[in-house]
Length: 117
Image (cartoon, rainbow, N blue to C red; front, side, top):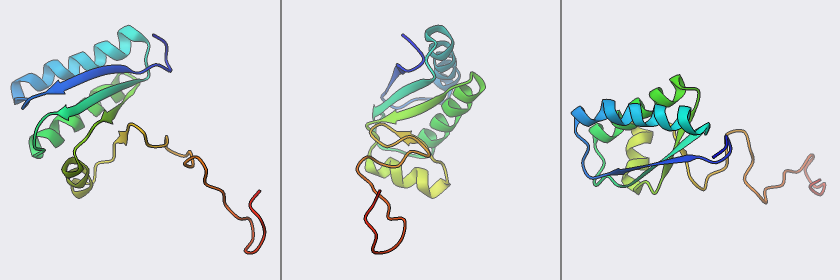
């Protein structure tokens, strides 16, 4: 695996507070052991989101940042998007453009009435 190929961590079922430190260790281990810059966290199996899910994701992101990487969410429920927005946390989602990259197919006009370049 190289720095461009993300490592994957599947999060399933309700996660207890006691499991969070171990999952943070898993994220750090995936980043350090694989050389990946991103750990994709598959959150589709977490169940209904709540503040415990928000705390888990925030701590995983912090662990990833401390290890020199970041996390990206795969298969988040729409309610999780809303909850993360509500608490002011921004996560990169799979299928979204990277930060500072315009979405594909978007062209901007330089001046009104002029064709896009």
